[in-house]
Length: 232
Image 1 (spheres, rainbow, N blue to C red):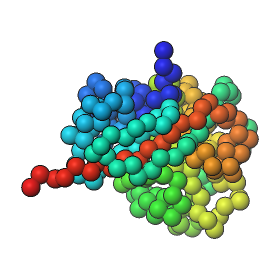
Image 2 (image 1 turned 120 degrees about the horizontal axis):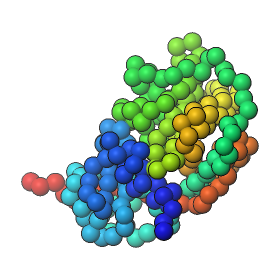
Image 3 (image 1 turned 30 degrees about the vertical axis):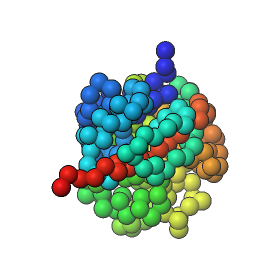
Image 4 (image 1 turned 120 degrees about the vertical axis):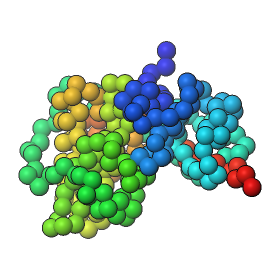
C-alpha cells in the first residue's frame, strides 16, 4: 500500500486540504488563489488531459512525484527539480524559549508577506495562501523580516512551508525559531510535522536536521504549464 507521503499533494487534497480542492476521483487541484498544486492518483495521459480540460491556456501547476515522469504533449515543463522530504518523528517538541516578538500574521499582513516571499523566493505564495493557516512572523518596526506557515495537510501530517528571512536579517536564528514554533503547534494538534526543501539547499537541510527532522525520501517537484491554445 502506498504511503500517504509518497503522493502528498494527492493525499492532502483528499483530507486536510479538501475544502479548497477541485477535480474528480482521479485528479485534484487546489483553489487557484490559494496554491498552484495539483495531483493525480496515477500520473497517466488521460489524467493530464482532464487537468488540461479543467484549466486555462498558460495555467501552471505544481506536482510532487516519487520519481521522474514523462510529461505528456500539451504541457511545458518549467521546472523539474529534486526535493527532499523530511519528517519530525519525535513526540516531544524541540526545546526553545518563546520569543515575544513572534506574532501571528493576519489578512492585513498579506501585502507584506507577498513582498517578503517575492524577495526571498521560498516557493509560490499567492494572495490567498494565508488561508492555509498558522502563519507567524517577525517584524522590525513595520517591516516583515521573517515568516513561516503551514501548507499541505496529508492525512495525519502537516507541512511547514514558506520559511523565509529577509537577506538583511539572516544569521539571527529567526528561521530556527519559526520552525520550532511550527513544530510545537503541529504536535499540540496531535499531528506530525513534515517539510519539503530543495535537495541542494544544504544550509536549510542542516538547520532542519538540528531541530530533529529526518529525511524520509527524495522526490521530484514539477512545475508544468498548459500549452493548449484558447478557443477563438
